[in-house]
Amino acid sequence: MKYITAIIFVFFTLNLFAQQKQFSLDERRKYIYYEVADGRALNKDTLLNRAQVFINKFYKKTIRQVQLSDTSIIAKGKVIIDKTVLIAGHPSGEVSYSITFQARNGKYRFWLTDFEYIPYQRDRYGNYVASTKNSTPLEKTPSKLMANEWKDMVVATYDQVQKFGNELKAFINTNPSIHSVKDTKLLYIEKW
Amino acid sequence: MKTILCAVLGMASTTCALAQTVSTSSPLEFSGSVDTYFKYDFAKQPGNIKTYFDSENNSVSLGMIDLLLKKKTGKASFVGELSFGPRGQTESIPDAAGGGSSFHIQNLYINYEFSDKFSMTAGYMGTFIGYEIISPVGNFNYSTSYLFGAGPFQNAGIKATYKFSDKVSLMAGLFNDWNLYTATKGVSSVGGQLTITPLEGWTAYLNVLSGADVYGYGTIEDLTTSYQFTKLFKLGLNAANYDMKGSDNGYAGAALYPQIALNDAVSLGLRAEYFKYKDAGTVKGDQYTALTLSANIKTGGLTLIPEVRLDHNGDQPFLNKNGLAAPNAGQFSIAAVYAF
View 1 (spheres, chains in turn red, yellow):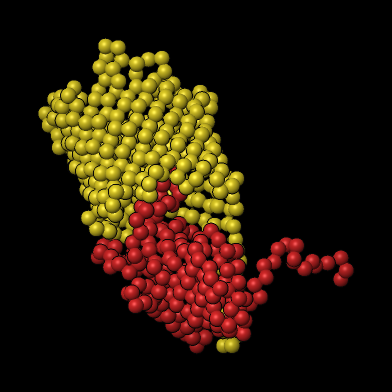
View 2 (cartoon, rainbow over the protein chains, first blue to last red):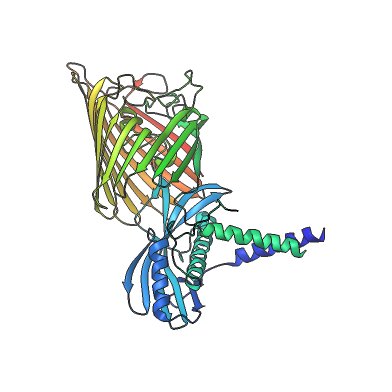
């Protein structure tokens, strides 16, 4: 019984944490996701290279690099916001953002900001497509009728951005060599 | 306790690891809509305005429930969309089981993307002709236009789409006769759509469909376009011309769709339409003008659509309160459309 109580407690604690997640505001009063991370003694070129590989390999469809210097990457990206219930849902909009990655020897930082939302609508073929070209800054105060939906969308954006940040850090902090089938070690089962 | 905690952490780690796996498969998409409405005809005559759907008078009526599944794996995807209820059954053209007790397939097709630029689609698809569609989720106004009713609803066939650039793409296809799951006259129509995006926010579709249809054989040319002038103001236009092969019959019309957003939850939109069946010999074709003013009030997945519609035809095809021929008809409706 006490185990069940403990699990329920952990579950509600996690839920509480989940509800508390939110963007910070930068000096321009714009939402920002900002992280400084330990580069595990890697030099800045390696850190920059790994970040570049990560973006171009895993996010090439949604992130476009716009500027590269010897210490930083500036790119534009977007996340698709999903209305998912259990296992099925559909995209409900997209949030574009700008991302800056900066590296120094032994550490790096990145931030995502300038979040702008474009709602999707279903077209005649059943595909979800942008309903307008005009995006709305995420910091905007919505009308009362749209307040709950807007809040959900901001939380969903944060979740996706946080996931991106965690994946980027995991990729940089581990060996980022990208395996192909050819590189995969063969397992011989004839002899046993 | 340790065992349980380890198990929970283990499961969490496994979930994270799985989430990091790069997959070319998208999750199964599930979406749809439900709609219902009240309509009141000012002359208290049901079916006074003879466009599709919402034909009753002084009645809370059902639209349809629409269910859509979509899945993409690699370069292949499918869409399957079924609707049930009057708007998706008896009031739509195909009635698969007959007797008005059937469902209506809105979309059922498979698509394959050979490259980022070239794709092919086969199956039964929402028509590429026109501004309005059957699903109320895709329309601003709840009632439909004369142009919508006169043109195709869906086309079964196979089509290829090539994207020349972000601003220009071309679709060409072979289709069955309109609105049929299986052809009655063979794969008898050829159609094409040139999509142009001259400016950001402005898209124009130039459409042609020629071959077998509900009238016989004919050719329809259609322009559907909309331009988002400002964040708050959008203007749409639909113009179409249909000529029936071997006769003077046909129709032509145009509709303007100005829409203005009052805020992020409330928008107002007008549909101003002119529609005419062509004169065939000495038989004069009907011509209609119609004004429809609608509001879209959104909260979450729900959209409320209060609407007033006024139609005019000098040949008096409408009925007044006394059941006599009248040149004008009007109606008020309020619809609730929930999309999920």
